[in-house]
Length: 243
Image (cartoon, rainbow, N blue to C red; front, top):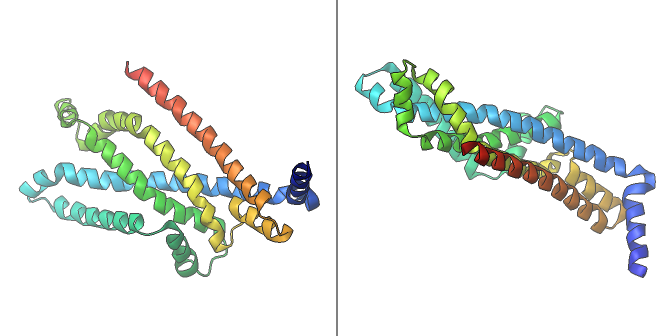
């Protein structure tokens, strides 16, 4: 049973000796904090971008026919939104993280907030497309129904469209946030002690990476399984409410 003794030794060196478990706890806390802040920022950006793009797509013909100034103003913001989506979805998140930290905020020392900003900007592009897809999937008759009730476009979106969209895209949004949690594992590139970085640091101290990195993988796996279970419960409840 030498392998069992070796495993116990590895566990002791990785977690117990010099209270190294605290490094994992700190890393996990930073990972969850970055994920939470990035998710909130991603939702905010996603809502704004989705609103701009869908409003332009749904009203451009009318505004152009009426020669409205709103056509050019909204068209400008729509072009900016499309550029943002193209750049963010077309470049690696770790490159975006390093540009924001090493170039844009080179004089800042708050790596956690910068990481949350970087991941939030990245997530916002995907959230925007999820929301946009949900809005565009709503039958156009719903917009006409809103107008028949005397609602303007904004009121129709708020009272009729958005509640249906959130119900349809909620599972996809939750899955995006699960992916966001795993993406934060590259935060160590800018010196943040996240969960992955903590495991790597302990491996470099003990000269054995097996136990630290396997432990990191298991922690991520447990969190993802819990979140996936929550998503499954929400999906089942949504299906039941549709009956």
